[in-house]
Image (cartoon, rainbow, N blue to C red; front, side, top):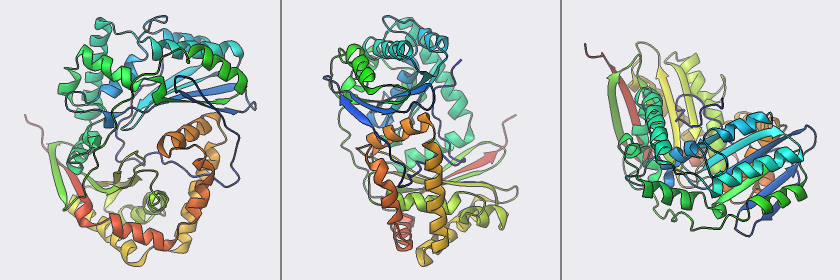
Amino acid sequence: MPTARTIAAAVLVAMPILALPLGAQTFTVKTHTLKNGMNILIQEDNAIPNVAFYTFFRIGSRNEGPGTTGISHYFEHMMFNGAEKYGPGEFDRVIEGIGGNNNAYTSQDVTAYQNWFPSGSANLEQIFDLEADRIGRLSFDPEMIESERGVVANERRMSVDNNNSSLLYEQLAATAYTAHPYMWPVIGWMSDIQTWTMDDLKHHWQVGYAPNNATVVIVGDVKADEVIRLAEKYLEPIPARNLPPKVKTVEPPQLGERRTTVRKPAQQPILLVAYHVPQADHPDYYALELLDNILSRGDSSRLYQRLVDKGQLAIQVSSNNAMNMDSGLFIFGVLPRAGIDTATCENALYDELEKIVADSVTETELTKAKNQMMASFYRSTQTINGRANNIGTYEVFFGDYRKLFSASEQMNKVTADDIQRVAKLYFSENNRTVATLIPEEASK
């Protein structure tokens, strides 16, 4: 069976970062735009007889509103539950039958579908047929809709309501944002999950899954001409449709620290601290990525040394710089040691951030961070899956996959002064939101 098709808020584990490329890591990508507006990106690699087939739809929780939160994630499930030609469960069965597998995820900005399968003309055509069926002719069977509604509601209970880290993250986002739809949980509020109407569902699918709202990335043992021929045969006949309404709301500057507290039965307290930072295509993105690395990546990182190793204040510390289409959050997570309160950990965190604001970082730290991030990308580009993900990510979040090849230049331009500048600019008290989970004894 395929793995669970969801993305939960991993707030206390270092989230996957978008690694940056080595200058030498370039490869040829062939592009083609279908008449219906769907973009196709192809990277031929016949080193191994396999293919990675990604489809990115620019639809996520940022495209939702009151009453429809979680609906993008719901369609991540429904896209595997039957269309005109292939019924419920058939998508998985057919892919497994040719020796492949698949997965999908939903985020604040995108819903992405991933297929991995052995190469060959018959297999490639089969995947195109499967994708065309669900993109163009998805089933809206009332019985299946209600069944999957229950599955998603139960997923929320397990992954959020009964998960202290995810529950606290949800409250953090709802507090940090007052205007922008990033305040909505990706999985949705329970009351919305239980009450989406058929009209809500059909409208969201019509705009979100329009072919002109999608980018397909195919990497592996294929021929570009054959990919384009099959795309024109199976995907081009799907009519272009209206796109999701543009997200016009810009989160206003935060004018003072915000705090939220969750009190519930728990084994230990949790601390989350968030600062608003710019979107992925902002010039400060690379400096923030490097700062993220310096602060929490590895046992020699500043926060690990201060809070975990030498300080013995926490059993775990993490940070994550957002990669979003709009202004996101730079989030720190701390699990205090037994007997240590969250206030002590919070003060130690701020002290370390103030040191960077006052004195910046050393050239040794900065060089190490750059080397680590470039090495990470190099490893990812050794797989067809890593290349497909990187090509699609740069195309969708940075506006052009070609920026993948110049990112190393942008990163290498970052200086210690840039690190100090962004720390001072974004890690201010007025720009801070703090969420704390305080354990309580369960009611008898």
